[in-house]
Picture (cartoon, rainbow, N blue to C red):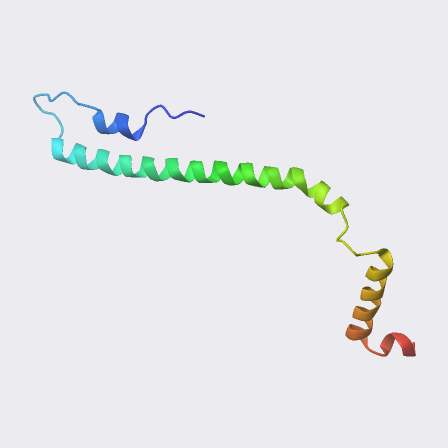
Length: 97
């Protein structure tokens, strides 16, 4: 999606002055506000575009990271840690039942 105007286009736009034209100062102030908004929107779009690219790259890398177990970790280590955690959380309730 391309913008029709850039902040520079708005800044450099000249309007013809007619007999009963608009107040030139009011138009200039309004255009200044529009230019500021345009610049803010442009920066935000760039920021979001970069964030989107970064997140897409993370999503593409995620399956590869999940498939690789941590070094030194085996199923036995995981089961032992899980058992220890259950004993810590539930205490003797598991052993007495």
